[in-house]
Length: 369
Ligand SMILES: NC(=O)c1ccc[n+]([C@@H]2O[C@H](COP(=O)([O-])OP(=O)(O)OC[C@H]3O[C@@H](n4cnc5c(N)ncnc54)[C@H](O)[C@@H]3O)[C@@H](O)[C@H]2O)c1
Image (cartoon, rainbow, N blue to C red; front, top):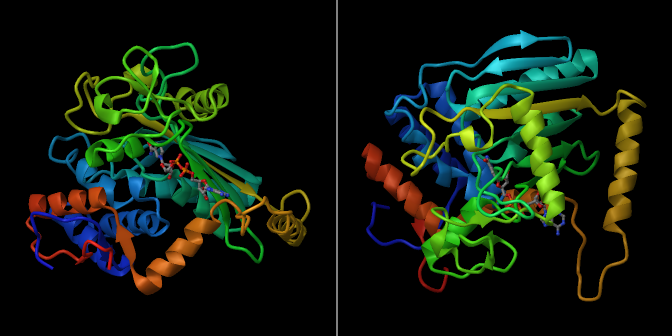
C-alpha cells in the first residue's frame, strides 16, 4: 500500500517486512550483508511479539549514521583475548552485526574451553538481548546476552535516573522443546513501553515510573525528560542491573552510567560523542559436565515437570520462558503479524526519510480486521 498520513495498526508478513528493512538500510549506505543480518534480527524480534525492540528501533538508530555516531563501513575487531574470553572494539559499526559476531565468537570459544565470554565496547543499541542468547541455544549451548544502557532507571532511595534498564537474556537448549529463553529489562518494564503509552495518551500501571520528585506515578507524560523507570521487583532488579553494569560495562572498559551517551540522537543533556555501550555475550557448553544427551534428558524432565505442575484456579496453561514468543512467531509466519501503531508510525517515518513509496503493510480497519 502507499504511504498514508494516518495509520493505526497494520498486518505484515515477516518476509515482506524484512525486504522493506533491507532496502531502507541500503539507502542509508549500509553493506548488503549487514542490512540482511540486521533485518533478520529485528524482524525475528517483531515476530516474537517484542515490538518495543524490533523494527521500531531502526529509524532512530539509522539517524546515527549521517551524524558519524555510527559508521556503515566499520567492522568490529578483537583487541584482546584468552582461551575462553575476548574483548572486541565495535568501532561504532552496525551494532546488531557486532553483537551477532560477538556471540558467534563466544560460541566458538565455548567449543574448546567449555565457556566463552566476549564483551564489546564502542557499540550502540543491539535491540532485544534475547536474539543473541538464542544463537547459543541453537548450538546446544546456554547463551546469555546483556548490555549497559544509558541511565533511565532509579534505584531504591534515589531520585531520578541512576542506572540503565540494563537488559539481560538467557537461552537454554530445550531438548524436544524449542530454546527456553527469558529476555527482560532489569527495570519494571522497558523504557519503550512508557514511551508507547505516552504516544498513545494512555496511563501506565503503578510500579513502572517515578516522577521528578521520585514519587511513583501512573502518568507517562513527563518521561523521558523527567522522572525515572522503577527497577523490576525493587532491590532485586536494582541488584541485577548492577550486575549487568559490571559484567558488560565495568569489566570491558565501556562508558558507565551517566557517562553513557544515549544511542538516540538529539537527547537533551546527552554526553557528547557516540554511545559506548558495553555488551557481554556468554556461551556455555550445556553438556560439558554430564554429556549433551545427559543435559537434554534432564532439561526435558524439568520442562515437563514445569508444564505439568498443578495450575492455579482459572489458569489454562503454564508456559516456559520464550514459549509465547515462539508460538507468536509460528503464527506470524502463517498469518502475518499485527504491528502496533507506534511501530507503523516509525516505519512510515523511515520510509519517508529514505524515499520508499511502497510499504509492505496491510492496514487494519477499525474493528481490527
Ligand atoms: N537494548 C536495550 O538497551 C534494552 C533495554 C531494555 C530492554 N530491552 C529489551 O526489551 C525487551 C522487553 O523487555 P521487558 O522487560 O519489557 O520484557 P517482558 O516483561 O515483556 O518479559 C518478557 C520475557 O518474559 C517471559 N514471560 C512473560 N510471561 C511469561 C509467563 N507467563 N511464563 C513464562 N515466561 C514468561 C517471556 O517469554 C520473555 O522472555 C527485551 O527484548 C529486552 O532485551 C533492550
